[in-house]
Length: 334
Image (cartoon, rainbow, N blue to C red; front, side, top):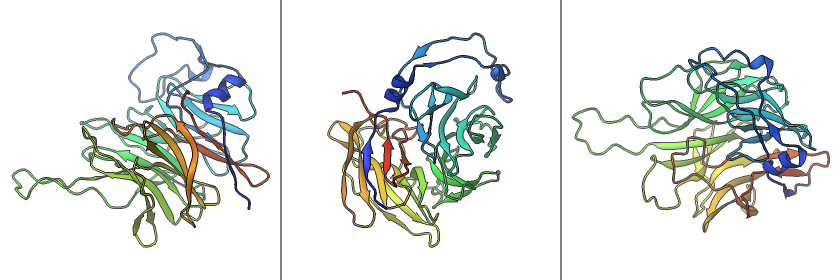
């Protein structure tokens, strides 16, 4: 299969050329989702042609873009047209991801009072919870970067839930269950009075994606949490072998390596990295190790902050009828 990459316009530009997004209430949004304690006080309508830190994905048939904006989820024909809100209301929904067959959309929602992983039909109907975590008595639980395995039965998501201080990667059946951790658990913190020394730093893992055969899981990893005056590199792309449990570091980027994405054939790895004062996307041939810039710059990464929405917004491949790949990412203004 011939494989080429073409950098496409930002999602904001797609929205501009296909008509502005207008937020409005729908009849099926009249009732607040169960579990939320707030009631709607008023409705504010506005029209916009741009957004910030928008997550997007492209359906397997290459016909539809799904994206989030201000806590709601929209779909948009890839050739242009009107953006349609499919999930929205008082709850905060984000980071939608099409299933491999295009019949389901995974997304994150706090409609139950805590952020959980949900799925719904492509038009937003029939929402159901995959994870059913409850609120904690500590800091909030965070989830980010859901992705599907190629079989369409399982999903990967990164989660930070107290008392663990960092994000771990978990595998869930789309029909529910407790999930399985990918990789090692954080070290147990020392007990009160334990004088064995400072606690070992815990690994932070996020943005996991699976190889087409499901054997390998790729994710960005760093040791420890937020630190002041951090020295680069902080993150690199790790490959986890589900059969052996072995891990290997795939990148050696001086500006860190974040948000891995595999091409549909599993031969190319795209990742974000910092270069000088901007963030760009590089593409790596996993067979030869050759690398090159795909697009530079894109939206600035979030390495120096608390990265509760991952380090970079997601980007997506879309296969077309010729076997080539187009590529969608959100770029920064010049």
